Image 1 (cartoon, rainbow, N blue to C red):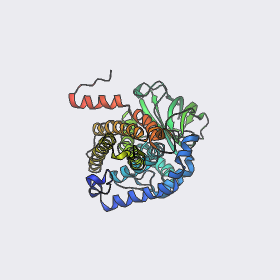
Image 2: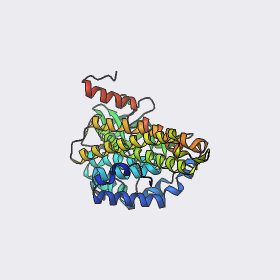
Image 3: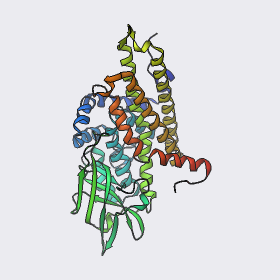
Image 4: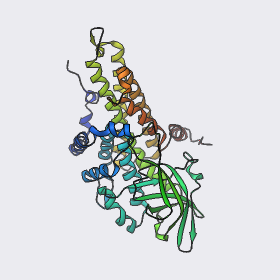
Length: 389
């Protein structure tokens, strides 16, 4: 019989609308032509041409695509998720660029900013002409952001911010940073043009993961901002955590793209690689590996699609997003590692994408809520007892 693609085995496309299929097809076609041929080189050199890539993605309408107004496409959550899946099928760094731009920086301004903030930044960010980053994590405060040391102090009518942020995607190329800082009135967000005196960004070197991504440390030394730089419509951790929930939703779909690419690569390789006189796809142990990976990809996809439908209906909770991120990232890593075993020694080279995906997914497992934190979110939800401390 002719081989059937893993998601076709459960007729996954029958669950999508014509518009969703069209958006997915457009994104996939563009990425295959414009980005995928270069990604292994960008990963190997550790250099992503962020501005060039962002302009192409902006022209396609992917940046902030799930937001309404200000040059944003206003698509459904499911359509956004499908785009994230196609982006991460190329590379997690590419999806990270889009997630940070649209679901962290743009969403933070769109949801909590003043009308002036929105008019000034969102249209340019939607087009890719302006790049944004999101400063929450600090070197000593990852899972416990409430302890952040970055502090914004009132000085007359101005704010003066001192502190640093770590592991910031798009940091060295950003035109604007959404920075979260402690104040005498609790945690507040600030829209910080990166040209402001005292703001600097240092590129993080020697990464073994997310190499096709700009990762930086932000340093703010007596950064002086006008009073209206503060995001007016939120106070406390609700602000940054709401943004993170938006970005985590994209991850739920996105990592399935990496998993799909690994699985398809493993199937193609197993069909063409011969040992003992026949393709290794014809051996029972190989078929068990392929079948197990197929099941987890299919289950993860159905979970992501269900959460997407709930989000479009306004019924998605942060706990649900934790379920999706924990499960789908964990299974995507398992698929990438298992696929590597089918490729044998060839699996460790950049000629094939599987170990690149596996390395990238190690970062995705950690950022925007570690697997441990999402486990505790789920544990609290089902027991009613918080176990964070």
